[in-house]
Image 1 (cartoon, helix red, strand yellow):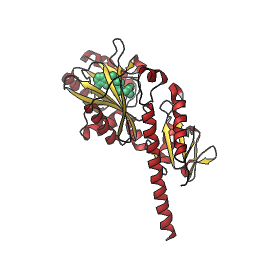
Image 2 (tube, protein in one colour):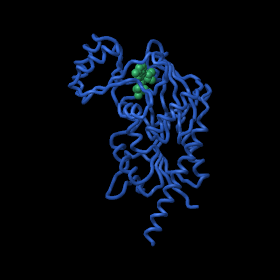
Image 3 (spheres, rainbow, N blue to C red):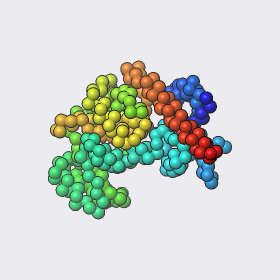
Length: 314
Ligand SMILES: Nc1ncnc2c1ncn2[C@@H]1O[C@H](COP(=O)(O)OP(=O)(O)O)[C@@H](O)[C@H]1O
Ligand SMILES: [Mg+2]
């Protein structure tokens, strides 16, 4: 069997470096060599090729991109081009979708996956926001491209909305995205899915008086078993987004008495060494599923390349 070669760009903090080494070792056993630290920030596109340190990335069998902290516009631009010629994990289109809260919520709802009720309106149509407020009583303003709970603003009265409007107008936004504020117990489920399979689950709890479960907003991680309903919901949400690897955030809506998907993350972190000590033990399973996935995708490319070659020879 021919050896395969793939590019990898993965985060190294919080134990990421150890995970990366395990992935590289396991891939080697499957005849897949890894070029690591392929930061597309340093790549250039030149005519038909995308070049990184003298290597033509477009000739590789796949690229694994797994670094949430450092994605720039430039990287995403190259990501998109590269993915038109080689397979990537995650696929660009799915990754881009998952980076946008409105695009994700829209597609999920269109496919029958429960989310928080939301509304998107043009920035000049702020009268909509007033009528929505009357209906919902409480809502959350969300930047569509935020993370870590940043920029989320709870609006719990007409006065708060009136106060907020001048600030929002000043920000020169194209649109407003708001969600109904969900009555929940300030805990969530994070469910990891790889290649359509359930990997593991943990919970997060908001800290103090905060209503956001993000660690960066003072939340904390705890051991939490998934149940069938939560796993099925996470799988369905992942399927709709088309992500090969996903971390689905789920909360329980006490008013509607159902689970809803809050967010689908395209680069869900592995458990950190501290979290592993706490009992979050899904890392090895996740590594194995990712290795299988990479192998499957590179075999598929080889088959297609062979077919094309044979056609040319005929
Ligand atoms: N509609 C909502 N109702 C109540 N709480 C919410 C709502 N949306 C988000 N939250 C809380 O805020 C946190 C961050 O929201 P999320 O949409 O996941 O954005 P981020 O990308 O910043 O993590 C969630 O984990 C949840 O605790
Ligand atoms: Mg989130």
